[in-house]
Image (cartoon, rainbow, N blue to C red; front, top):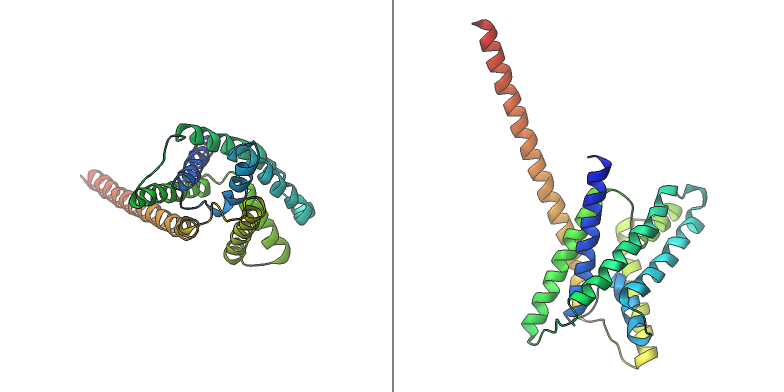
Amino acid sequence: MNVMKRYCIFLIGLTFMALGIVLIIKSALGTSPISSVPYILSLEFPFTVGEFNFVFSTLMFLLQPVILGKRFERVQILQVPMTFIFCAFIDFFMYIFAGLAPQAYYQHLIVLLLGCLSMGIGVTCELLGRVVMLPGEGLVYAIVTRWKLDFGRTKVIFDWSLVAVAALLSLYYFGEIYGIREGTLISALSTGILVKFFMNTLLKIRIKRIGKLRQQCRVNRINKISTQAE
């Protein structure tokens, strides 16, 4: 896959991820773990979810070279402009869907599930693009690399630590918990499942295509031999 194609796929992934985050927020059933802290702060201060997400992500980026030292790869500096684009997409979709306000509970669920689906597609495209990691994953990767931990388990602990911090901030500022409900749990659990499903589906399609190409090569070879024999 050439570089231009990888960047296009990665940017498509950022778009779907931003859309997913916004739809999950608009479902009013919670937020995704990675956006939970910025969302709570946006309720208290006159800054957007995207702006707080950028500040929060920048802090996570700055921790990576501190943890990794000389093992920090310079290409990961691209996390900063990519995060800026990602956060701009978040605010763009927040503006587009400003009037989205589900009424019945099933409508809340539909918006939530659409958000989770969008997140799954976005993360899949991010992985396929293989450009850089976003700061959330980058910080987890730095921790895992530095202390030789399991990535999956560390990511789960990291995500739920963010949720815990968001809950504490919500209690401090509002005296009750906002933005953390059943949707938070559903989005956290479903994203990994959807990404695994999409990656496996793409792998099967690729294997099927390779099989067809091999079969076509065999047919062409047989035809060539037959022509030479004549």
